[in-house]
Length: 112
Image (cartoon, rainbow, N blue to C red; front, side):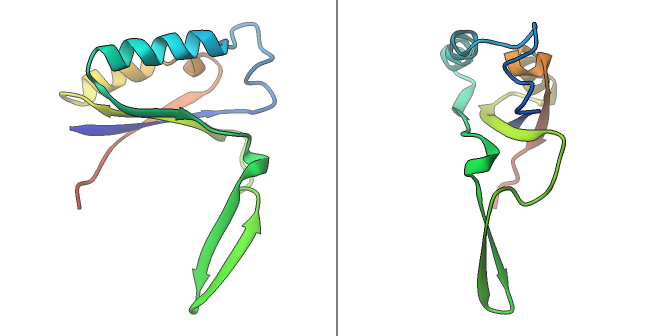
């Protein structure tokens, strides 16, 4: 089953806390998950200030610079996993280095 692990953190604190992960640690963990055969994709995202939000209302496109909502934590990246079950997906998510300074939301992917 596919699971999406959404990595959230406070951008201002992500790299400034003593327990903050370094990029090399994040890369190494992603490589280990990939080698296990469980990773389908993983990427880190640029800061939320680079985001553009698109809405379609009454047949008109509205484009807004920035994130869609004010939040304390921002989406920093994701892992798309192929795990046997939720427990396995949660084990992998718990090992994501950024979980030490933020959180990881794990959601099953709905097949269309």
